[in-house]
Image (cartoon, rainbow, N blue to C red; front, side, top):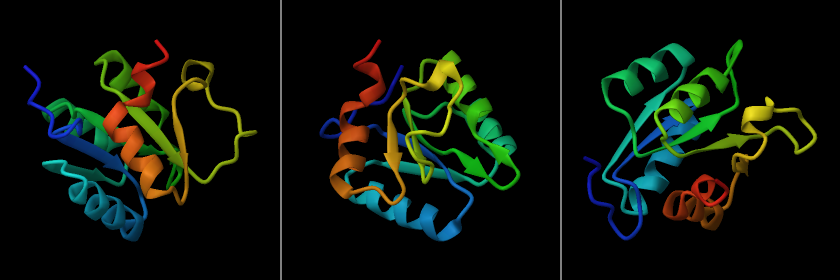
Length: 128
């Protein structure tokens, strides 16, 4: 059973980001939105371990991690029906796997409004 959401916000958010400064900034911002728990992972392996331990209510995935991409995490979240958004510095012209072409993408850096909207409305639920 999923925990109750506070003001439309997910209760538990997983951030997958390899830059610790960006991860801390996102964590502080998201906690300020009223999210109860924020967990961070800097690698695909760590994120998959955290998801296996406890699936989040929502995830923010940096696409380009050190020497790897976060698409394996996206596949796992998709299988668990956990909504997520990509947070990336890649432009719109960069090819994503077809399975994720429709997923929401937030630019890096993203505005507070865009981040809050992604969390509050879980944008990827709206398209399918």
